[in-house]
Image 1 (cartoon, rainbow, N blue to C red):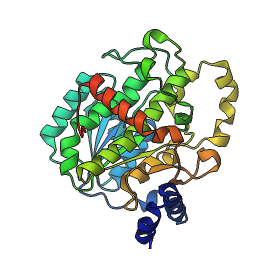
Image 2 (image 1 turned 60 degrees about the vertical axis):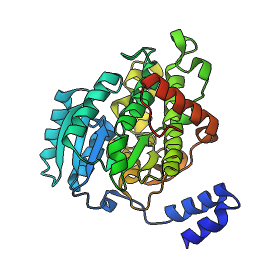
Image 3 (image 1 turned 180 degrees about the vertical axis):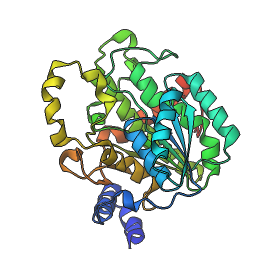
Length: 334
């Protein structure tokens, strides 16, 4: 039924078709952790897997039988997270590996080690990120938030592309944010050169918009290549994690902190959109998942919309080409 609708409607109005498909998809019973399929035999990488949403994703994947590479900037914190999860005696396996997305050298070393030890990669969950940090540069000279949240994951995906493309049905899941709606692109000053016009929230929004532009362009290029991987995205709504630690010294944050529980969800619920995007058999390429509640702040994971800017084809193409130039990583080039 849905296939026939796709054939008929895609010729007339793709957005109309997508809206109908989204509504039918979301009319099903609320998706919960109990809907996660058996992941025995699956190999999954989770960046930022030692805390917050990433930790909860690692826990759920391991509980359902997967072998999970817990990628963390700190091996010590990664091992601590691993031991905590293993106390639950899950059927899966956890391997801790060091990965600093703000250092392209670390990204290369991680990928080299992974490729030496694994012949396939079923899911690459690009979860790690930093939020609203003061202006700073990465080791490679990139603006910190764009460098970590987008360029690091772009390079990671590109280097792992060969093994992803050889793994039938593999998925790349990029974690964005509601903040993408405040993101703007100025390609003449993409990285706020010399701190010009930099604001922590503005830079964060730009990096999260970049996550979506990358996801949709990646899916377009995959389809042109005829390969089988799938690129999808998700956002956690407002989740009570340590990601906003750079805001905690702000007076307004301290005043509003007691109210967070009214509109935020805990990491166990907040991780479900990215977990669903990673494992639900019904997911299709370029899908975007987020919470079902008002304003997408919290709730069960459903298909949601991203803003018009995230679907800008020219911006997506320019960002891809610039990302290749900055990272030195080229893949699926046209």
